[in-house]
Amino acid sequence: MKYWLYESISNILDWTCATIPVGHVDLLKDPKPSNGGDFKPLSSLDRDNWNLYSPELYSDAPICLQVSGQKFTEEKVLACLRVIEA
Image (cartoon, rainbow, N blue to C red):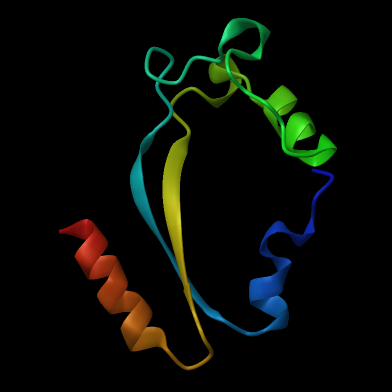
């Protein structure tokens, strides 16, 4: 992965983070459109990430959401997860 800063900001700032599973990659629901479909990359990094996606490779991979909060906000982050889960 070329873009290592994706999650490092949370570690640098010591944010509270938690993830919650929301599904799995499905070959039928998550196909990669041929020729990119309507996809227009916002940057070269965006294009590179798009090119890495392969439904066959990621079939049944978990899909999760990450909730981040400021330092010492564990209770708030967990409360957010409860709302998302409901």
